[in-house]
Amino acid sequence: MKRVGLLGGSFNPLHIAHLVMAEQVLNTLDLDEVRLMLTHIPPHAEGKQTLTTSTRLDMLRQFVSEDQRFSIETIELERAKKSYTYDTLIALREREPDTAFYFIMGADMVLDFPNWYRHDELKELATFVAVKRPGYMVEELADFLWIDAPHLDLSSSLIRSYVANGKSIKYLVPSTIQQFIETHQLYKEGRK
Image (cartoon, rainbow, N blue to C red):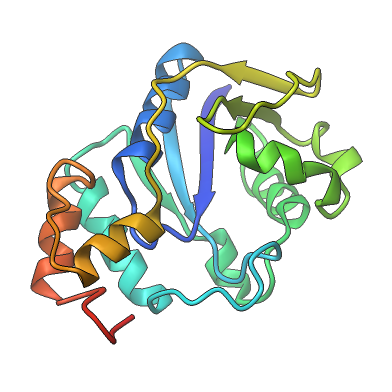
């Protein structure tokens, strides 16, 4: 069976903490690949302001073109409605019955997991992998496979703030992402 990690997010923008988390899971669990699953309308982030979907997708394409262990999963974009993990995993398993999926999340998302749509049924559809995250002291719940990773206190909102304020984001995002942000003048003051 193929072993595929799924790391979902708005990736507004993708940054090094995302990649450290994905890399640790990829290596620890000996996965074949990690797919960056771009969310269209995340149910837990109502009203969240992001770049257009096409811009975020183009930004991810720049990154995956240089690292073949990563790919982009667009299944949630294809549905073009609110994305529930349950529906996504059902569709992925129907599309790829010979693939074992590993849903990767940070410890911050574990805290909210009991509020997820049909959360009790999710563990039957994929292995849920939780990566410890700084500032989130979460009891290691049995429903999750826990992975240690270097702790980086970094967020997409911090990256956007740095760009808006003219600060360097070198080494905080992959160089391809930094070039994309600079070329397209993203996250400048007053721009989304």
